[in-house]
Amino acid sequence: MARRQRTKLTVPPADPDARVTAIRVVRTDPRRVTVYVDKAPAARIWADDIHRLDLREGAPWTEDLAERVADAHGACEAIRGALRMLAARGRTRCELVTRLRAKGHTEHHARAAADRLADQGYIDDAAVARHAAASIVARQPAGKRLVEAKLRARGVCQSDAQAAAAEALEGHDPKADATALARKHLRAMSPTLERDVVRRRIVGRLARRGFDTNVALAAVDAALADVDA
Image 1 (cartoon, rainbow, N blue to C red):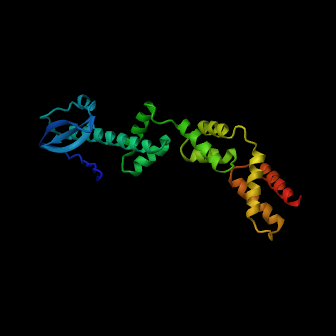
Image 2: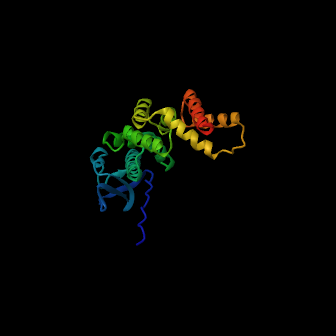
Image 3: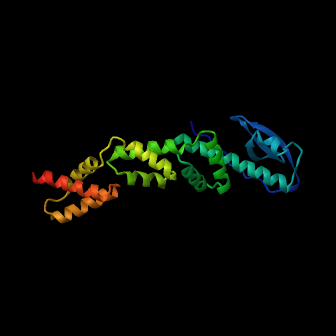
């Protein structure tokens, strides 16, 4: 069965001769209503907004009413878009706002949607950070610095990033992890390379994985010692 396309509405501009002709509950979502102006669908808003907007059938489609309905329509669409995104995967507040803006929602509506959903418990940056940190460490050994940097790039605050990185790396020995990664890189390198070149390249790769310089140097020495043994 073909997927039904969602009809995107454009709120019409004010017209002194136009009237709100109907306010009907959306059949697939009773939390929303469709506002009709001169018998044509003009906007979809939350049913709770009807009273706040003083919206009623027969009301003239004034500039003030058109602007308030357009704002309510934009807010409703931003929240619905955000919920679809969150249903696909967990996102930080920053990621959600960025995605909503990319989809054409205004900065105001995107941030308002994120704030509302965070208040309702749909957005939890700390939980997203913990899951992401665990995934980073599980894929390949990594240092605290890299884990925190990747989380910060997703908009996670510093305290949540630090806590998530510490939890993901709990029980890990940085030198042991770095040494395991150094051995992996060493096996992939040409045996004809000079030792200084090998050492420099592996230290650089370990640094890019977030390991401190002293840890990276010790790890490379340990990996090279295995070869020499």
